[in-house]
Image (cartoon, rainbow, N blue to C red; front, side, top):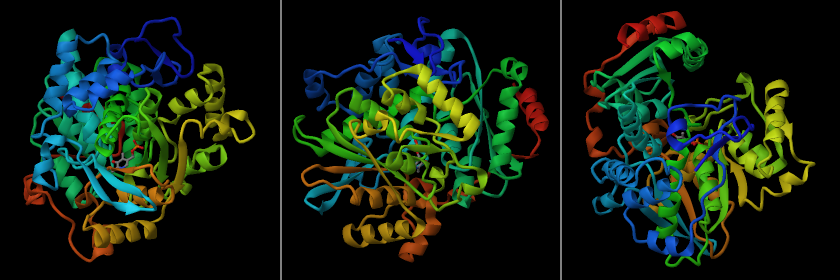
Length: 481
Ligand SMILES: *Cc1c(COP(=O)(O)O)cnc(C)c1O
């Protein structure tokens, strides 16, 4: 399999899965995609239905990474997707399933269910891909005798998922910036209680934007970046996207009895990473009827799927909401879908994303391409804080199930898109304990806390406070690498 950039650079060059694993953007600023999507035959689909999660992950991933020997890839997926790592299940008996499907009930003539993706170490779906990435990084670095220093900024989910995936891994260090005293007590404790010597928590005296600016400044210093082997694990990482393809297959098998049936998925979306994986599963031949994109008040994606207009938001139009992991001003993986929508024409993608940089967006409404959005199964909707509170309350009362705010965004939009006879699977992206304040508001009670997290906030914390100054952060990294 060869990888190409959505903007056309390097066509005719060879880029393997391992080549692009540790990198970010392609050198022309585009995103990597396979030169064509692998198709899954009816026989394969029949065989995959009975596989464990780890072995299904092996089958899916091996179609995208033919440069990794099969037995080595299989040992990586079996090491990653274990009941022990995905142990934060709500019901003991589902521990071995990794991503249990919880049926809520029948609404509008169809079955509505939740695919639990948040039973991993940090209680958010980002563990599904990040845990594999940790093992892939360790494997690839060891093979080439290299090391990597991951630098990131976080306001919550991404940082902790990266730290729990990379802790104790040979050849990898993590330097994670977070705004000092601005994360919830739970999220702070999750990250800062890690005592592993390869994990460095930097509490920046500033806000999240300051943290991101420092990461940008360090990444733009190419000499420093090369000298200290700085890398990232952000959501455009191809291996993260492809690891997420697996649970669309797993969810489909759990919700159906035969491979003749079709299902729809609703995906709480921010950077379009999760739902991009659903698009890829569908392109591989998984019988998906609709992919429902659910946003919160930051509705860049909902606006596009309703109108054909893609408009990046400025800081004053980017809202802090109670589903904060979807508070984005632009959707960094969206270019991958646009490439497919435009019939894989890199010259046009280059032009459109040039317009994004120059004019803040583009408009496909008048072009024939936008009409094809439906052929790809996409529809969308948005929700508000009041909608989230209603959904959390309703699902708790009706189905005795507690959901988090992001999953609530998904549930609200899913209900607007139910089709009789087509099972609807809502992806559960986090556990309620991570966003306890809104649970208390909606239910007037404490969120459920998995046993492993009892007393978390009382554990000793390990972090260093730094000023919002890139040169101080550089010196900090230089001393430790
Ligand atoms: C990251 C995240 C999302 C958004 O996922 P994308 O891949 O960026 O679309 C949704 N919910 C939760 C809980 C998250 O952590």
